[in-house]
Amino acid sequence: MSFRFTNRIQNTPKSFIREILKVTQDPGIISFAGGLPNPHLFPIEALQDAARETLATSGARALQYSTTEGHAELRGWIAARYAKRGITVDPDQVLITTGSQQCLDLLGKLFIEKDDEVILERPSYLGTIQAFTMFEPRFVTVDLEEDGPNLEQVKALLATGRPKLFYAVPNFQNPSGLTYSRAKREALGALLRNHPETIFIEDDPYGELRFSGQHHQPVFAHTGGRSIMLGSFSKITVPGFRLGWMVAPPEIIRLAVKAKQAADLHSSTFNQFVIAEYLKNHSIDDHIAKITACYGSQAAAMVKTLEREAPEGVTFTRPEGGMFSWVTLPEGKGSCMDLFNLAIEQKVAFVPGMPFYTDGGGQDTLRLNFSNASEQTIDEGITRLCRCMKDFLK
Image (cartoon, rainbow, N blue to C red):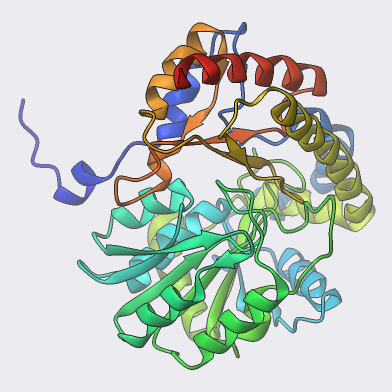
């Protein structure tokens, strides 16, 4: 039977990571492939208490349809948390979404027409590449340096007046693990203020997960109100509730609400009430401290083993937070997909770098996730992987 599907869905790539996760279902495989939070850190008992209290005190409201904008108490908490960082956000500027991934779909619907220019980091988050590809834009990229984007490239692209959106992950970027310096954030903010026709989308799912170094203000704080921030409860509580948020100027929120109504009416009322109840009665800062202490040890274990075992010419990032390290092989040695196949034979998995590029790059790169494996498992898995690298690079 022949179906007349749209070009946009046929041209949208599958989630490469979700396809890889099928391969890693073998329990004998050590996987650094998924961007998975550590399940041992999920506050299960506290959420059980919050769910019971929600049902006991707000059962009917929590189980009923609700407003598209989201639970008022939760939006207020998000605004207040930004205020603690010196950023003024009105709760009416906050839209609760079904994971921050939904924000990307909503913003694509609001802003992207076919062949519109969208600036991405190089490499960029593949979930954004997938979400925005649905709207058939023309991607243009800026190289990531150790302290953030190449500002000369940003300046040149903005000067054309063509880019509609600029999407970035300034904190512990997925996939590279890199973080923008304070100087780069301020300079980028100044550039964006001079080019208000381009909307900056600052995705910040990992910003709270800093285990070394100093926190920096988001680029949002330097843009004069012409940018959008995305956040998520997935990395600081649990991913399964699928709760994220968008902070944006009122005009954008108004249309995003309309787009969300057409998509799903509203995010789970019950999940919003439970998270709000949890946040009211438990210290999120204490919980985040547990996460960062754990991730810091896991990241250190990965870096230590890579320093000891990685073959000559292989480089890797040393993240100060987040969940990922990025490995670069010597140029011109072949495709990391071949390395992936070698690694799977040795029962270890990673994500090849190509899906994080829109221009065919990334053949000599790979992403490693350290948050979902013990230090002992990391040492064993990275040792196996480095043996595979040595064979691959012969």
